[in-house]
Length: 148
Image (tube, rainbow, N blue to C red; front, side):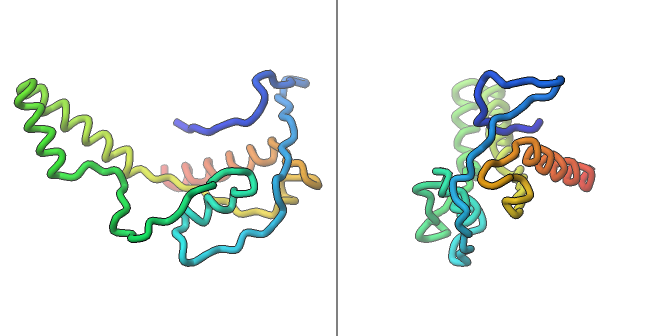
């Protein structure tokens, strides 16, 4: 399943059977300077700062303090013991199923970062939604075809 977000108005114009998106104003044309002291994800988030995204994000002072949210073996064992005490074998199966689902969801890390010239998807300072949509759709299809 693909998921995304939309900043369009709820009522969209439809002309000749095709949706007409309102123009998206480019917030800034300033060039982002990649900072090798930051992780890739933080650099990518900071690229969107002129649009108000990524404000307040920072790297951990000590990388070993960072957590991915995975549920460790010790926590899973403790949860299984509580499940056994509370609901018997069903409790063990339930807690293991939930913890395994969380870990599987966290292990799936898709990433598409596309750096492009603003003129490829815009005229002056207005972004063409259809060009952006088509560019992203092409990248997703290429990725799916390469892996499946």
